[in-house]
Length: 331
Image (cartoon, rainbow, N blue to C red; front, side, top):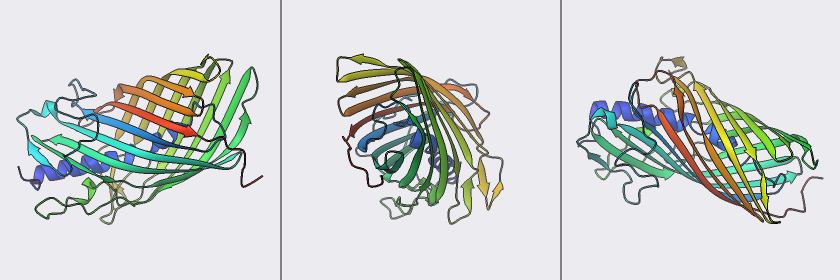
């Protein structure tokens, strides 16, 4: 199969561009910020995120489509090959392995950095392709407006923050024939984006809830293509259970909602790729001394009308080491 078949090139380009821009804001602030006993401790961690889109309107979608891979394929980078499947088996899968770091300048001021490695696969028009590489770096900082976490009864925390996504990912990958892939298939997006977020946590004894709300301002690439600004909401309702002195398990019910006005060309909405998606699922966080293990899965609950494969499910797996930080640069 020829990668530059016009129909495949057009559809795969639009799909990869859209989801690479819209799927990151919620994951920046939604994971590792809602449930943690290490409230003002610096940390370093690894997070693996998987998200799939599968099934058109009226069709059943699958979080793990047939002939797809949950983990990043070891030898599929840049490959495009044919399958004798119908359009019902079309899918897009977006995998990201992230190195995350957080540093507290002050008990109330945190700085965060995320370095991602992206692997995007798409089965479309009887062809499958995977493009992998270093993605766009995210930098953001938050201020703890409210920190009342030492009470035996009611506890609260409120964080407000700002961030930026830089176009550091490769946008010039090419195939074995020397042909450069369309810009919007690249591991990097080619745009600079900004976002703001608010995270509020409230807990009473062993029960609690965490709500994260974010708004993302998407920039344009050099061709003037972009996605309308997007908003996401992420809610955790959780229960704390201690096991001895050093172990705590925190099961949770998770709900995620995202909205975007869709594709734009030279600043004008085209009416394509509007996103209106609600997902829900379960999470489990385990804390063992200074180590936290984070897991979660969410499945599609509602998806607005779309002519592309619908959101099917997302999974995250992470591990973090939290330092016993006693010194802060700012008093």
